[in-house]
Length: 294
Length: 224
Image 1: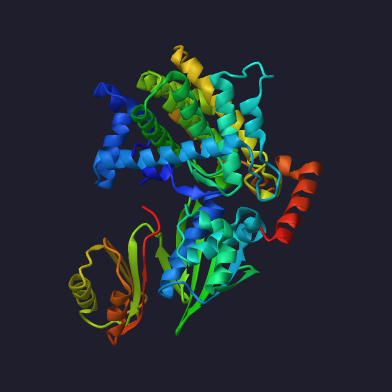
Image 2: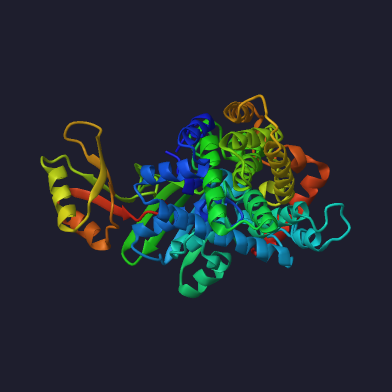
Protein backbone atom coordinates (compact mmCIF):
# COMPACT_ATOMS: atom_id res chain seq x y z
CA UNK A 1 0.00 0.00 0.00
CA UNK A 2 1.07 3.63 -0.34
CA UNK A 3 3.33 5.00 2.38
CA UNK A 4 2.39 8.62 1.75
CA UNK A 5 -0.92 10.32 1.03
CA UNK A 6 0.95 12.72 -1.22
CA UNK A 7 1.94 9.81 -3.50
CA UNK A 8 -1.58 8.37 -3.44
CA UNK A 9 -3.16 11.73 -4.29
CA UNK A 10 -0.64 12.27 -7.12
CA UNK A 11 -1.44 8.80 -8.52
CA UNK A 12 -5.19 9.46 -8.39
CA UNK A 13 -4.83 12.88 -10.04
CA UNK A 14 -2.57 11.48 -12.77
CA UNK A 15 -5.20 8.89 -13.67
CA UNK A 16 -8.11 11.29 -13.09
CA UNK A 17 -9.63 8.86 -10.65
CA UNK A 18 -10.45 8.56 -6.95
CA UNK A 19 -8.21 7.56 -4.04
CA UNK A 20 -10.38 4.50 -3.48
CA UNK A 21 -9.76 3.35 -7.05
CA UNK A 22 -5.97 3.62 -6.73
CA UNK A 23 -6.08 2.03 -3.28
CA UNK A 24 -8.14 -0.95 -4.49
CA UNK A 25 -5.93 -1.42 -7.56
CA UNK A 26 -2.74 -1.39 -5.48
CA UNK A 27 -4.21 -3.70 -2.82
CA UNK A 28 -5.24 -6.18 -5.54
CA UNK A 29 -1.70 -6.09 -6.94
CA UNK A 30 -0.02 -6.38 -3.51
CA UNK A 31 -2.17 -9.35 -2.47
CA UNK A 32 -2.41 -11.04 -5.86
CA UNK A 33 -6.21 -11.07 -5.56
CA UNK A 34 -8.86 -9.57 -7.84
CA UNK A 35 -10.38 -6.21 -6.86
CA UNK A 36 -13.79 -7.91 -6.58
CA UNK A 37 -12.47 -10.10 -3.72
CA UNK A 38 -11.14 -7.09 -1.84
CA UNK A 39 -14.50 -5.36 -2.30
CA UNK A 40 -16.29 -8.47 -1.00
CA UNK A 41 -14.14 -8.46 2.14
CA UNK A 42 -14.96 -4.77 2.67
CA UNK A 43 -18.66 -5.54 2.04
CA UNK A 44 -18.55 -8.13 4.83
CA UNK A 45 -16.91 -5.55 7.09
CA UNK A 46 -19.71 -3.10 6.26
CA UNK A 47 -22.36 -5.67 7.22
CA UNK A 48 -20.68 -6.21 10.61
CA UNK A 49 -20.33 -2.44 11.13
CA UNK A 50 -24.05 -1.91 10.47
CA UNK A 51 -24.92 -4.80 12.79
CA UNK A 52 -22.88 -3.28 15.61
CA UNK A 53 -24.51 0.15 15.10
CA UNK A 54 -28.01 -1.37 15.25
CA UNK A 55 -27.23 -3.55 18.24
CA UNK A 56 -25.69 -0.67 20.19
CA UNK A 57 -28.52 1.77 19.53
CA UNK A 58 -30.98 -0.55 21.31
CA UNK A 59 -29.23 0.30 24.57
CA UNK A 60 -29.48 -2.90 26.63
CA UNK A 61 -25.75 -3.66 26.77
CA UNK A 62 -23.44 -3.51 29.76
CA UNK A 63 -19.67 -3.79 29.67
CA UNK A 64 -17.66 -6.33 31.70
CA UNK A 65 -17.12 -3.80 34.48
CA UNK A 66 -20.52 -2.10 34.14
CA UNK A 67 -18.78 1.26 33.65
CA UNK A 68 -20.31 1.92 30.24
CA UNK A 69 -23.47 1.07 28.30
CA UNK A 70 -26.82 2.60 27.42
CA UNK A 71 -25.58 6.05 26.42
CA UNK A 72 -25.92 5.47 22.67
CA UNK A 73 -29.65 4.91 23.12
CA UNK A 74 -29.94 8.10 25.20
CA UNK A 75 -28.47 10.22 22.42
CA UNK A 76 -30.39 8.30 19.76
CA UNK A 77 -33.75 8.94 21.45
CA UNK A 78 -33.09 12.44 22.77
CA UNK A 79 -34.95 15.51 21.54
CA UNK A 80 -33.25 17.84 24.03
CA UNK A 81 -30.05 18.63 22.21
CA UNK A 82 -29.40 21.40 19.68
CA UNK A 83 -28.60 18.72 17.07
CA UNK A 84 -31.27 16.16 18.01
CA UNK A 85 -32.67 14.55 14.90
CA UNK A 86 -29.79 15.75 12.69
CA UNK A 87 -27.07 13.63 11.02
CA UNK A 88 -24.61 15.05 13.58
CA UNK A 89 -26.55 13.57 16.51
CA UNK A 90 -27.02 10.32 14.60
CA UNK A 91 -23.26 10.00 14.02
CA UNK A 92 -22.52 10.65 17.71
CA UNK A 93 -25.08 8.03 18.79
CA UNK A 94 -23.63 5.50 16.33
CA UNK A 95 -20.05 6.02 17.55
CA UNK A 96 -21.19 5.39 21.14
CA UNK A 97 -23.22 2.39 19.95
CA UNK A 98 -20.34 0.54 18.29
CA UNK A 99 -18.02 1.14 21.25
CA UNK A 100 -20.67 -0.03 23.71
CA UNK A 101 -21.03 -3.23 21.68
CA UNK A 102 -17.25 -3.59 21.72
CA UNK A 103 -17.05 -3.11 25.50
CA UNK A 104 -19.76 -5.76 25.94
CA UNK A 105 -17.72 -8.31 23.92
CA UNK A 106 -20.00 -7.95 20.91
CA UNK A 107 -18.80 -8.37 17.31
CA UNK A 108 -17.19 -5.31 15.71
CA UNK A 109 -14.69 -4.50 12.97
CA UNK A 110 -11.37 -3.29 14.34
CA UNK A 111 -10.88 -0.20 12.15
CA UNK A 112 -8.12 0.55 12.76
CA UNK A 113 -8.29 -1.00 16.26
CA UNK A 114 -11.08 -2.24 18.52
CA UNK A 115 -10.63 0.77 20.83
CA UNK A 116 -11.19 3.17 17.94
CA UNK A 117 -13.76 1.04 16.13
CA UNK A 118 -16.72 3.40 16.60
CA UNK A 119 -15.61 6.43 14.60
CA UNK A 120 -15.46 5.07 11.05
CA UNK A 121 -18.79 3.15 10.96
CA UNK A 122 -20.53 6.04 12.71
CA UNK A 123 -19.35 8.72 10.28
CA UNK A 124 -19.75 6.63 7.14
CA UNK A 125 -23.08 4.91 7.82
CA UNK A 126 -24.54 8.04 9.45
CA UNK A 127 -23.66 10.31 6.53
CA UNK A 128 -24.53 7.67 3.92
CA UNK A 129 -28.01 7.35 5.39
CA UNK A 130 -28.48 11.12 5.59
CA UNK A 131 -27.27 11.65 2.02
CA UNK A 132 -28.72 8.44 0.53
CA UNK A 133 -25.38 7.01 -0.57
CA UNK A 134 -25.45 3.45 -1.94
CA UNK A 135 -23.37 0.56 -0.61
CA UNK A 136 -20.90 0.49 -3.50
CA UNK A 137 -19.82 4.03 -2.67
CA UNK A 138 -19.65 3.10 1.01
CA UNK A 139 -17.31 0.24 0.09
CA UNK A 140 -15.18 2.71 -1.91
CA UNK A 141 -15.09 4.90 1.19
CA UNK A 142 -13.90 1.95 3.31
CA UNK A 143 -11.07 1.39 0.83
CA UNK A 144 -10.04 5.05 1.15
CA UNK A 145 -10.20 4.72 4.93
CA UNK A 146 -7.97 1.64 4.71
CA UNK A 147 -5.47 3.53 2.56
CA UNK A 148 -5.31 6.41 5.07
CA UNK A 149 -4.92 3.95 7.97
CA UNK A 150 -2.15 2.09 6.15
CA UNK A 151 -0.25 5.36 5.67
CA UNK A 152 -0.65 6.14 9.38
CA UNK A 153 0.55 2.61 10.27
CA UNK A 154 3.66 3.08 8.10
CA UNK A 155 4.54 6.63 9.16
CA UNK A 156 3.36 6.72 12.79
CA UNK A 157 1.42 4.08 14.71
CA UNK A 158 -2.05 2.65 15.21
CA UNK A 159 -1.50 1.51 18.77
CA UNK A 160 -2.49 3.33 21.94
CA UNK A 161 0.32 1.53 23.75
CA UNK A 162 2.80 3.06 21.29
CA UNK A 163 1.30 6.44 20.46
CA UNK A 164 -1.59 7.24 22.81
CA UNK A 165 -5.20 7.73 21.78
CA UNK A 166 -4.15 10.05 18.93
CA UNK A 167 -2.98 6.81 17.24
CA UNK A 168 -6.36 5.09 17.76
CA UNK A 169 -9.37 7.44 17.79
CA UNK A 170 -7.18 10.17 16.25
CA UNK A 171 -6.19 7.92 13.35
CA UNK A 172 -9.80 6.75 13.09
CA UNK A 173 -10.94 10.38 12.83
CA UNK A 174 -8.47 11.01 10.00
CA UNK A 175 -9.60 7.83 8.20
CA UNK A 176 -13.29 8.69 8.63
CA UNK A 177 -12.85 12.33 7.59
CA UNK A 178 -10.94 11.43 4.43
CA UNK A 179 -13.27 8.56 3.51
CA UNK A 180 -16.42 10.64 4.04
CA UNK A 181 -14.98 13.54 2.04
CA UNK A 182 -14.49 11.24 -0.95
CA UNK A 183 -17.92 9.64 -0.44
CA UNK A 184 -19.58 13.06 -0.53
CA UNK A 185 -17.87 14.11 -3.76
CA UNK A 186 -14.59 15.63 -2.58
CA UNK A 187 -11.48 15.53 -4.75
CA UNK A 188 -8.39 13.49 -3.74
CA UNK A 189 -6.76 16.76 -2.69
CA UNK A 190 -9.74 17.62 -0.48
CA UNK A 191 -9.48 14.15 1.07
CA UNK A 192 -5.88 14.99 2.01
CA UNK A 193 -6.97 18.23 3.66
CA UNK A 194 -9.76 16.43 5.51
CA UNK A 195 -7.23 13.95 6.95
CA UNK A 196 -4.90 16.77 8.01
CA UNK A 197 -7.75 18.80 9.51
CA UNK A 198 -9.04 15.85 11.53
CA UNK A 199 -5.67 14.65 12.76
CA UNK A 200 -4.41 18.10 13.75
CA UNK A 201 -7.38 18.22 16.11
CA UNK A 202 -6.36 15.04 17.93
CA UNK A 203 -2.59 15.61 18.22
CA UNK A 204 -1.33 14.86 21.72
CA UNK A 205 -4.41 12.92 22.77
CA UNK A 206 -3.41 10.46 25.49
CA UNK A 207 -4.57 6.89 26.07
CA UNK A 208 -5.70 6.76 29.71
CA UNK A 209 -8.42 4.12 30.17
CA UNK A 210 -9.61 3.35 33.71
CA UNK A 211 -8.10 0.08 34.87
CA UNK A 212 -6.63 -0.37 31.38
CA UNK A 213 -10.06 -1.46 30.12
CA UNK A 214 -11.36 -0.39 26.69
CA UNK A 215 -14.35 1.33 28.28
CA UNK A 216 -13.92 4.74 29.86
CA UNK A 217 -13.11 7.20 28.33
CA UNK A 218 -12.77 5.09 25.13
CA UNK A 219 -16.52 4.95 24.41
CA UNK A 220 -16.80 8.75 24.65
CA UNK A 221 -13.52 9.41 22.82
CA UNK A 222 -15.03 7.64 19.83
CA UNK A 223 -17.97 10.05 19.92
CA UNK A 224 -15.76 13.14 20.19
CA UNK A 225 -13.42 11.66 17.58
CA UNK A 226 -16.39 11.33 15.23
CA UNK A 227 -17.33 14.97 15.91
CA UNK A 228 -13.82 16.07 14.96
CA UNK A 229 -14.07 14.00 11.76
CA UNK A 230 -17.37 15.72 10.89
CA UNK A 231 -15.84 19.16 11.46
CA UNK A 232 -12.98 18.22 9.12
CA UNK A 233 -15.38 16.96 6.41
CA UNK A 234 -17.42 20.16 6.61
CA UNK A 235 -14.31 22.31 6.23
CA UNK A 236 -12.65 20.21 3.51
CA UNK A 237 -15.75 20.08 1.30
CA UNK A 238 -16.11 23.87 1.70
CA UNK A 239 -12.65 24.21 0.19
CA UNK A 240 -10.73 24.88 3.39
CA UNK A 241 -7.08 23.93 3.00
CA UNK A 242 -4.75 23.04 5.85
CA UNK A 243 -1.27 24.45 5.20
CA UNK A 244 0.64 21.48 6.69
CA UNK A 245 0.28 18.42 4.39
CA UNK A 246 -1.46 15.35 5.83
CA UNK A 247 1.74 13.25 5.70
CA UNK A 248 3.54 15.80 7.87
CA UNK A 249 0.63 15.95 10.33
CA UNK A 250 0.77 12.13 10.55
CA UNK A 251 4.56 12.26 11.06
CA UNK A 252 3.96 14.76 13.85
CA UNK A 253 1.50 12.39 15.49
CA UNK A 254 4.18 9.66 15.40
CA UNK A 255 6.81 11.99 16.85
CA UNK A 256 4.51 13.09 19.67
CA UNK A 257 3.64 9.44 20.37
CA UNK A 258 7.28 8.43 20.65
CA UNK A 259 7.98 11.19 23.15
CA UNK A 260 4.80 10.56 25.15
CA UNK A 261 5.36 9.41 28.73
CA UNK A 262 4.53 5.74 29.26
CA UNK A 263 1.81 6.78 31.76
CA UNK A 264 -0.20 8.08 28.80
CA UNK A 265 0.13 4.99 26.62
CA UNK A 266 -2.52 2.51 27.71
CA UNK A 267 -0.94 1.70 31.07
CA UNK A 268 -3.65 3.26 33.28
CA UNK A 269 -0.79 5.11 35.00
CA UNK A 270 -1.82 8.65 34.11
CA UNK A 271 -4.56 10.89 32.78
CA UNK A 272 -8.16 10.12 33.72
CA UNK A 273 -7.16 6.65 34.92
CA UNK A 274 -4.99 8.22 37.62
CA UNK A 275 -7.61 10.63 38.99
CA UNK A 276 -8.99 9.83 42.47
CA UNK A 277 -12.35 8.81 40.97
CA UNK A 278 -10.67 6.91 38.13
CA UNK A 279 -8.58 4.88 40.57
CA UNK A 280 -11.53 4.19 42.86
CA UNK A 281 -13.82 3.06 40.04
CA UNK A 282 -11.16 0.88 38.49
CA UNK A 283 -10.46 -0.82 41.82
CA UNK A 284 -14.15 -1.46 42.55
CA UNK A 285 -14.95 -2.67 39.05
CA UNK A 286 -11.93 -4.92 38.66
CA UNK A 287 -12.79 -6.60 41.94
CA UNK A 288 -16.35 -7.12 40.75
CA UNK A 289 -15.13 -8.61 37.44
CA UNK A 290 -13.07 -11.16 39.37
CA UNK A 291 -16.00 -12.05 41.66
CA UNK A 292 -18.43 -12.55 38.81
CA UNK A 293 -15.85 -14.55 36.88
CA UNK A 294 -16.70 -12.41 33.86
CA UNK B 1 3.61 -4.47 3.89
CA UNK B 2 0.37 -3.14 5.35
CA UNK B 3 -2.84 -4.39 3.74
CA UNK B 4 -6.12 -2.49 3.53
CA UNK B 5 -7.79 -5.48 5.13
CA UNK B 6 -5.40 -5.33 8.11
CA UNK B 7 -6.67 -1.80 8.71
CA UNK B 8 -10.39 -2.47 8.04
CA UNK B 9 -10.42 -5.60 10.17
CA UNK B 10 -10.33 -8.06 11.71
CA UNK B 11 -13.99 -8.73 12.42
CA UNK B 12 -13.81 -9.67 16.07
CA UNK B 13 -15.51 -10.02 19.43
CA UNK B 14 -14.52 -6.98 21.55
CA UNK B 15 -13.17 -5.28 23.45
CA UNK B 16 -9.49 -5.26 22.48
CA UNK B 17 -7.71 -6.18 19.26
CA UNK B 18 -4.57 -7.03 21.24
CA UNK B 19 -6.04 -8.48 24.46
CA UNK B 20 -9.01 -10.30 22.89
CA UNK B 21 -8.54 -10.98 19.13
CA UNK B 22 -4.76 -11.43 19.39
CA UNK B 23 -5.14 -13.60 22.50
CA UNK B 24 -7.65 -15.81 20.65
CA UNK B 25 -5.22 -16.20 17.74
CA UNK B 26 -2.44 -17.30 20.12
CA UNK B 27 -4.82 -19.95 21.50
CA UNK B 28 -5.65 -21.08 17.97
CA UNK B 29 -1.96 -21.40 17.08
CA UNK B 30 -1.14 -23.32 20.28
CA UNK B 31 -3.98 -25.78 19.61
CA UNK B 32 -2.12 -27.02 16.52
CA UNK B 33 0.73 -28.36 18.66
CA UNK B 34 -1.49 -31.08 20.12
CA UNK B 35 -3.57 -31.60 16.98
CA UNK B 36 -6.92 -30.53 18.42
CA UNK B 37 -8.66 -29.31 21.57
CA UNK B 38 -6.38 -30.07 24.51
CA UNK B 39 -7.48 -31.96 27.60
CA UNK B 40 -5.38 -29.80 29.90
CA UNK B 41 -4.05 -26.28 29.50
CA UNK B 42 -1.86 -24.14 31.74
CA UNK B 43 -1.97 -20.52 30.61
CA UNK B 44 0.69 -18.24 32.08
CA UNK B 45 0.01 -14.55 31.52
CA UNK B 46 2.74 -11.92 31.54
CA UNK B 47 2.74 -8.12 31.76
CA UNK B 48 -0.35 -6.32 30.54
CA UNK B 49 -2.03 -9.67 29.78
CA UNK B 50 -1.70 -10.50 33.47
CA UNK B 51 -2.67 -7.03 34.69
CA UNK B 52 -5.73 -6.20 32.58
CA UNK B 53 -6.51 -9.51 30.89
CA UNK B 54 -9.60 -10.33 32.94
CA UNK B 55 -11.37 -7.11 32.01
CA UNK B 56 -10.59 -7.71 28.35
CA UNK B 57 -11.73 -11.33 28.28
CA UNK B 58 -8.16 -12.44 27.50
CA UNK B 59 -8.79 -15.64 29.48
CA UNK B 60 -11.97 -16.44 27.52
CA UNK B 61 -10.32 -15.56 24.21
CA UNK B 62 -7.33 -17.85 24.78
CA UNK B 63 -9.48 -20.76 25.95
CA UNK B 64 -11.84 -20.12 23.01
CA UNK B 65 -8.87 -20.22 20.64
CA UNK B 66 -7.71 -23.50 22.20
CA UNK B 67 -11.14 -24.95 21.34
CA UNK B 68 -10.84 -23.70 17.75
CA UNK B 69 -13.00 -20.56 18.01
CA UNK B 70 -11.95 -17.75 15.64
CA UNK B 71 -11.73 -14.11 16.90
CA UNK B 72 -15.24 -13.31 15.55
CA UNK B 73 -16.91 -16.29 17.25
CA UNK B 74 -19.44 -15.08 19.83
CA UNK B 75 -18.98 -18.30 21.79
CA UNK B 76 -15.79 -16.62 23.13
CA UNK B 77 -18.02 -14.82 25.65
CA UNK B 78 -18.92 -18.12 27.33
CA UNK B 79 -15.75 -20.03 26.40
CA UNK B 80 -14.84 -20.83 30.01
CA UNK B 81 -18.21 -22.55 30.62
CA UNK B 82 -18.01 -24.37 27.28
CA UNK B 83 -14.48 -25.58 28.14
CA UNK B 84 -15.75 -27.11 31.37
CA UNK B 85 -18.53 -28.93 29.51
CA UNK B 86 -16.18 -30.09 26.76
CA UNK B 87 -13.62 -31.52 29.17
CA UNK B 88 -10.86 -28.94 28.71
CA UNK B 89 -9.31 -28.48 32.16
CA UNK B 90 -7.64 -25.08 32.10
CA UNK B 91 -5.78 -23.10 34.71
CA UNK B 92 -4.39 -19.58 34.66
CA UNK B 93 -1.33 -18.17 36.33
CA UNK B 94 0.11 -14.67 36.40
CA UNK B 95 3.85 -14.71 36.05
CA UNK B 96 6.91 -12.87 34.78
CA UNK B 97 8.23 -14.52 31.63
CA UNK B 98 11.28 -12.26 31.33
CA UNK B 99 12.61 -8.75 31.79
CA UNK B 100 10.50 -5.85 30.55
CA UNK B 101 12.83 -4.93 27.71
CA UNK B 102 13.10 -8.54 26.53
CA UNK B 103 9.51 -9.75 26.60
CA UNK B 104 6.58 -7.98 24.93
CA UNK B 105 4.05 -6.67 27.48
CA UNK B 106 1.30 -8.88 26.03
CA UNK B 107 2.91 -12.29 26.28
CA UNK B 108 1.56 -15.71 27.21
CA UNK B 109 3.06 -19.17 27.70
CA UNK B 110 0.64 -22.02 27.04
CA UNK B 111 1.35 -25.61 28.10
CA UNK B 112 -0.99 -28.18 26.57
CA UNK B 113 -1.69 -31.87 26.95
CA UNK B 114 -3.78 -34.06 24.70
CA UNK B 115 -3.58 -37.87 24.66
CA UNK B 116 0.15 -38.67 24.48
CA UNK B 117 1.16 -35.19 23.43
CA UNK B 118 2.43 -32.36 25.62
CA UNK B 119 3.83 -29.11 24.25
CA UNK B 120 4.61 -25.53 25.24
CA UNK B 121 4.24 -22.37 23.17
CA UNK B 122 5.16 -18.80 24.02
CA UNK B 123 3.82 -15.90 21.99
CA UNK B 124 2.92 -12.22 22.05
CA UNK B 125 0.05 -10.08 20.85
CA UNK B 126 1.53 -7.09 19.04
CA UNK B 127 -1.57 -4.91 18.56
CA UNK B 128 -4.36 -4.66 15.98
CA UNK B 129 -4.78 -8.45 16.27
CA UNK B 130 -1.30 -9.27 15.00
CA UNK B 131 0.54 -12.04 16.84
CA UNK B 132 4.03 -13.47 17.04
CA UNK B 133 5.04 -16.92 18.32
CA UNK B 134 8.51 -16.71 19.87
CA UNK B 135 9.12 -20.16 21.33
CA UNK B 136 7.88 -23.73 20.91
CA UNK B 137 9.05 -26.47 23.30
CA UNK B 138 11.95 -24.22 24.29
CA UNK B 139 13.12 -23.66 20.70
CA UNK B 140 13.14 -20.02 19.54
CA UNK B 141 10.85 -19.59 16.51
CA UNK B 142 9.39 -16.67 14.55
CA UNK B 143 5.86 -17.42 13.41
CA UNK B 144 3.38 -14.65 12.58
CA UNK B 145 0.41 -16.86 11.81
CA UNK B 146 -0.32 -15.18 8.46
CA UNK B 147 0.88 -18.23 6.51
CA UNK B 148 0.43 -21.93 7.15
CA UNK B 149 3.76 -22.77 8.73
CA UNK B 150 5.84 -25.86 9.43
CA UNK B 151 8.62 -25.60 12.00
CA UNK B 152 11.11 -28.38 12.49
CA UNK B 153 14.48 -29.23 13.97
CA UNK B 154 16.65 -31.68 12.08
CA UNK B 155 20.12 -33.13 12.45
CA UNK B 156 22.51 -31.58 9.95
CA UNK B 157 22.46 -34.37 7.34
CA UNK B 158 23.19 -33.84 3.66
CA UNK B 159 20.15 -33.49 1.46
CA UNK B 160 17.72 -32.89 4.32
CA UNK B 161 16.21 -29.80 2.69
CA UNK B 162 15.70 -31.63 -0.62
CA UNK B 163 14.04 -34.58 1.12
CA UNK B 164 11.74 -32.35 3.11
CA UNK B 165 10.83 -30.37 -0.03
CA UNK B 166 10.19 -33.64 -1.85
CA UNK B 167 7.98 -34.97 0.93
CA UNK B 168 5.93 -31.75 0.97
CA UNK B 169 5.56 -31.91 -2.82
CA UNK B 170 4.35 -35.53 -2.53
CA UNK B 171 1.79 -34.36 0.05
CA UNK B 172 0.60 -31.67 -2.36
CA UNK B 173 2.03 -28.77 -0.36
CA UNK B 174 3.58 -25.77 -2.16
CA UNK B 175 6.39 -23.95 -0.33
CA UNK B 176 6.11 -20.14 -0.17
CA UNK B 177 9.25 -19.41 1.87
CA UNK B 178 11.87 -21.52 3.62
CA UNK B 179 14.28 -20.27 6.26
CA UNK B 180 17.10 -22.46 7.48
CA UNK B 181 19.33 -21.56 10.40
CA UNK B 182 22.11 -23.53 11.99
CA UNK B 183 24.21 -22.52 14.96
CA UNK B 184 27.30 -24.47 13.84
CA UNK B 185 28.45 -26.95 11.21
CA UNK B 186 27.08 -30.36 12.06
CA UNK B 187 24.73 -28.82 14.66
CA UNK B 188 20.96 -29.01 14.56
CA UNK B 189 19.30 -27.19 11.68
CA UNK B 190 16.21 -25.21 12.41
CA UNK B 191 13.67 -24.69 9.62
CA UNK B 192 10.65 -22.43 9.31
CA UNK B 193 8.69 -23.28 6.17
CA UNK B 194 5.74 -21.15 5.09
CA UNK B 195 3.42 -23.02 2.76
CA UNK B 196 0.40 -22.13 0.62
CA UNK B 197 -1.90 -25.00 1.64
CA UNK B 198 -2.79 -26.10 5.17
CA UNK B 199 -0.60 -29.09 6.05
CA UNK B 200 -2.62 -31.80 7.77
CA UNK B 201 -1.56 -33.87 10.77
CA UNK B 202 -0.28 -36.51 8.38
CA UNK B 203 2.35 -34.09 7.04
CA UNK B 204 3.65 -33.62 10.57
CA UNK B 205 3.69 -37.41 11.04
CA UNK B 206 5.51 -37.94 7.73
CA UNK B 207 8.15 -35.38 8.69
CA UNK B 208 8.61 -36.98 12.08
CA UNK B 209 9.12 -40.34 10.42
CA UNK B 210 12.50 -39.18 9.07
CA UNK B 211 14.96 -40.52 11.67
CA UNK B 212 17.00 -37.30 11.48
CA UNK B 213 14.03 -35.04 12.18
CA UNK B 214 14.06 -34.45 15.91
CA UNK B 215 10.93 -32.44 16.17
CA UNK B 216 8.30 -30.96 13.84
CA UNK B 217 5.10 -28.95 14.19
CA UNK B 218 2.52 -27.47 11.85
CA UNK B 219 0.67 -24.26 12.57
CA UNK B 220 -2.34 -23.28 10.47
CA UNK B 221 -2.55 -19.59 9.68
CA UNK B 222 -4.82 -17.44 11.83
CA UNK B 223 -4.84 -14.26 9.73
CA UNK B 224 -4.27 -12.99 6.19
